[in-house]
Image 1: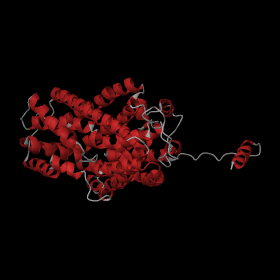
Image 2 (image 1 turned 90 degrees about the vertical axis):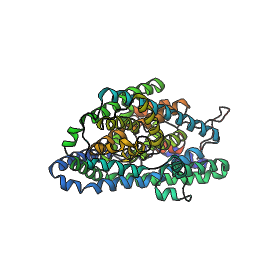
Image 3 (image 1 turned 180 degrees about the horizontal axis):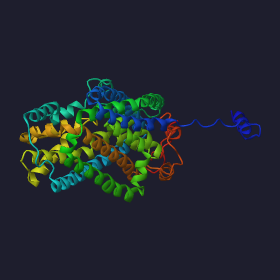
Image 4 (image 1 turned 180 degrees about the vertical axis):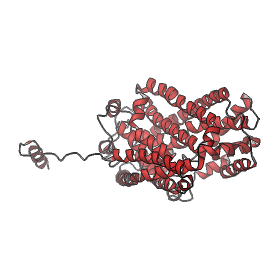
Length: 470
């Protein structure tokens, strides 16, 4: 075997050795140019022929459904590999505890910022309630009715595989953690299973890469349908809350998160977001942060954050780190209260929004989830305000985009921060990736070097590095 390797090495260095094959050209930038064109065409069609544009909604829903189809297997593979490859369960608990603590702190910050801006601009003043609008709020409240006990019990799947068939993120998270810890306990006997899961992950990402070529069609249908349904009048009438909400999201992302990531990691948030530009475009066109979840997992590993941190932080963050949703609930609650001429005192606002912070955890990252959460929380805490939820329906799709973009930005920053705090980030690799020296492999959504071993090998308790799995 040694002589064979030597012969291969000599052949590769000899003058007559064949030249290495040229690198495959990345053609995926054409895909994202097509997405931009599709969004613009969708807007044009929505204004030109609104009735026809409304009929295109299934195109957008179909693409998002294809992406959601891949969410459960990707989360399962990522968490099993992340947890199973760490030899000490305490390390997983440390990362998870730190992540949940950070998510809770950022939820309070988002609530406070939303309260500040909302009490300055007083959205909703001068709006008028109609009987049609009154019924919408109660319909949304019924759709979101779920108590805390039902929420906790809902995390437990009916069977071990039903989490995958039903597409429940939290159920998949629970099953993946159990399997990961079981593989931990098996030690070396579980390594073949881990290698099998790693190959399955490659297959899943390959399928996802194929699905992504349908993104322009989905973006066109989604944008045409929402513009055709909403038109310009609703945007003019409800421009105040939209402007206030977008302003608050920008302040939170670029001031709060930007300052935090710069102080902790020394990384510019603009460079990080530029690296994730295609994911932001995908979310903008589909109004769903879940559409970019698989790509965020792959890209954060490629960036240099270790697999255990990515595998725990990203899926958990999609259920518990909903910064954009918290800002939305704050602004929307103040909007409804002002519109119904039932302004709340600061104490009432804080009580309602703390209740909503609990109610929002586990909300799906898809269009309409924020509206249902708002209605359900108002029904439980202040039923008199539910009638006003219908006032916001006309622009919820546009607010959903900002909500999803903010949620995604918060989870990307959280992954880098938690990786830095736990010493699970290759800082040199982060610099090289953000500088463009190590481009992301768009053809497979996987980086071979990172997938072969974690970017930063897990540490034993005594400081000795764990051997990476082959």
